[in-house]
Image 1 (cartoon, rainbow, N blue to C red):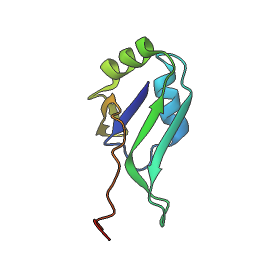
Image 2 (spheres, rainbow, N blue to C red; image 1 turned 45 degrees about the vertical axis):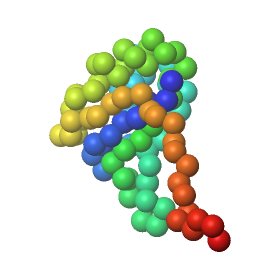
Image 3 (tube, rainbow, N blue to C red; image 1 turned 135 degrees about the vertical axis):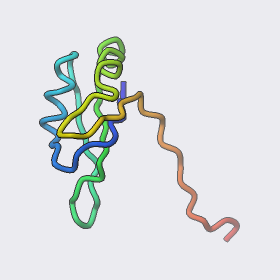
Length: 90
């Protein structure tokens, strides 16, 4: 399951996030989204866990929990919507 993790402190690393989620089971990937120009964290990321039951447990336990002074927003990630280019009909 792909899990959205929001309201991250900008100082949280992917390794720290992996450690937190691995307490609930296997973590297959972690990606903190960064600004493509500055490299600065955008304050959210995604954690992929192969087991849905372990992912559900992690979501319940970690949503509203605090890491580095910030309350996390943790839920199942929604599929990314296609962005329109704003140029219709040309």
